[in-house]
Image (cartoon, rainbow, N blue to C red; front, side, top):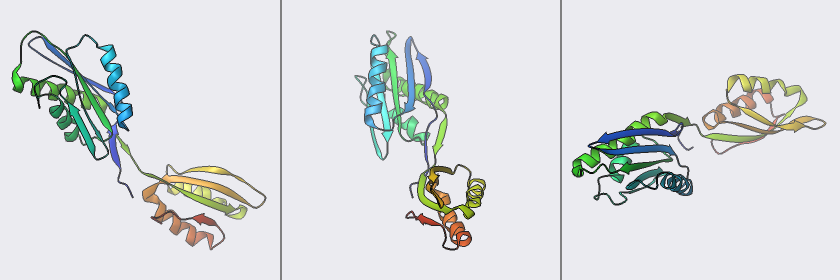
Length: 202
């Protein structure tokens, strides 16, 4: 079973200023690289006059980052570190810099990009994605009371199906961690009269 994953709850924006340079970071959910690229292109278009559009992402077990013309290791890497520190997955970050006329040095750039991204991470918040699983089920009419018990015992369980002349048939979708307990309940209460296709973790 895949573990729960923590992703951004929404897009967050964080800012940092240093000696006239302005850094604005955006942190957002990126379920795949294509989604990240779409957001990156939109931010580049929206801030076309900015000097740099540095970025980082973590998608699954992969990660990438870019300094976009800043000295190597001063922008994308500290941005990625801010995402890793927050333990976010499926996440992208883009930090736009407007140059203020004074060079900040490598240390100043690392602090600026890291700080702006960390603030954007905080603004984005956290949302836990709980793995879901499906079970195909058939309940005869005299066992339909089990449906109410399942809904009461397993919050978040969703039923999708319909009735024929003898039973309810459909799909039950629920938190994957609850599936083994549901199978035990069906075995105890249905006495072989209900049918279901058991998932791997039942």
